[in-house]
Figure 1 (cartoon, rainbow, N blue to C red):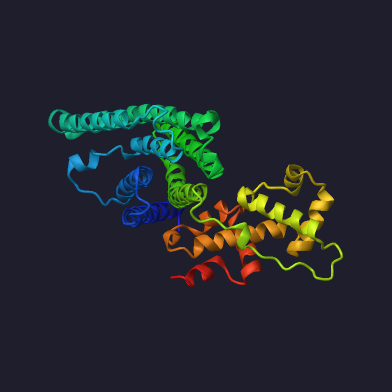
Figure 2: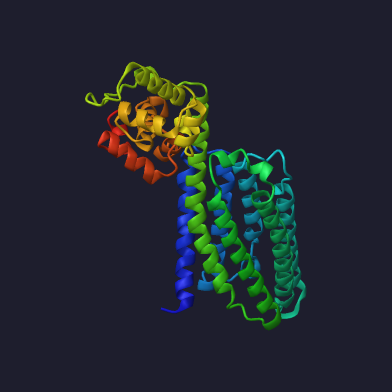
Length: 381
């Protein structure tokens, strides 16, 4: 199988995956809003552009001159939709300039110009020589590349430079996935620039194979990451609102521990100090902080680290890390057993309960309950 065949296979496979993604997300009403709409439009326009290229490469197009020469510039709408998706994901759409209307105007003008050229060549040019259309296509590609680089740079500036705009969302998502998309997108734009340069100077379009391969990979990756990450972030925002309004929180008075009976460290004063520590951590929701440290709490309580640690070990029968994780698991159980939160992702619940990753959440949950969060939630379905 030649490299051209492989690329064309990946191209059409990416198209099928893209259309499938559109169908699935459209029918998930809980998740569908403007952010998901723009993500869907990115996937849709990449899919339409790749489908158009695949049909041309495979010769599956009409013999009509108009259809043969009508290459719709779907790709010019992908970066504007990514920019819109980025601003809505970061919740800064009202603080930055939008480019949707301008991009739609450019798209419409280019389509009209192409139709006019096709009509002119069809009726006025001897033998219907499409040379003028090919020249226009190259000029159109150059303009679109420059315009898309401009929009892409604007998106990069928001993510990498304008930190005051990303401060809010960073409390829910580290944006590393989006930064990786920017890097991959930069490579794709670079491939486009190289392919266009080679085509202009040599007329050889083989370099576009790598561009099509790059867009196919981007299509697979963005569809999953964009929807998954946004779903988690949205769930975390709603969960945090519930936490801040004290709707579903654990209570320090309902958490019981059985201290080591034989430990000579047990006495009423030490027990009261432990109760103060537990109440301070639970009532102030400190256990929800993934960066919580024993040193910081001991300092807040005016206790030495050694005394603080001894109290935790004696009265909870856990070390500090397990003690905090036990509180986080109790909080997660409250969410997982509540019907109001049955549609929320388990990952979002774990992260909002103070765990810093899905793996640490699952490990801790199974350690304290002997079952996974998924199995625990299933008991309440």
